[in-house]
Image 1 (tube, each protein chain N blue to C red):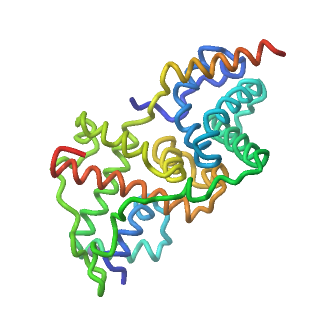
Image 2: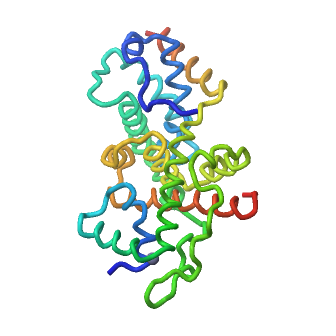
Image 3: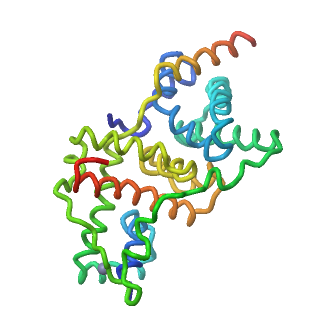
Length: 78
Length: 206
Ligand SMILES: [Zn+2]
């Protein structure tokens, strides 16, 4: 049987579907009987979805400008 | 802020269209920098990424679309960084890119020594959906800050997987690490953000 410590350490593998079918079954059995682990796993899941929905951070205009001038310099050279 | 993961105009990019390329730089410069930092460390990363962009631009007409454009770019910056590392003949001290001084969210005091049950169970969240979390302005700042101070490898894995949604196998190639290690780093990064969310839910601060 898995205990809470195991479940907490493998929570990302569980929500990302990276556990073997047997491990996954054990994991689900534990969740069935353990409220705290259900809360924990749902927090990991919410965190992952929240981060996905936030999406990317754009580069600053200065960073973009720097890259674009480097690219232009190079293409003039050839 | 969200967009479909690979919505770049590949035809225009192949023709080296400036506006299309600029959009690409804007979206992907940050994750490119994290990849470089995870391989060569902070001091050389900016330079390596500049070179990677220049080389990507030059090679765009030959981009065949066998992978997504993002994976293609991450591979270019990774190769550029690895070459640079060999050329410099200096190894970036491993602890620079892997060190992690933060307190373990799942430390020994969290569980009973025997039996492994929770000693300090996870707290309840009153904001418990992604959308509710997205509405909290101050929380976004806390999250940005926490991501910015993650150890370089952890940050790169986190950005590539949870934000750019690269496959685990691609991340292993890009960063030259094993899949089990990628999974460990990903879990650690997520737990750090969870810790911030825990505190925010409790105190409204980070
Ligand atoms: Zn449990």
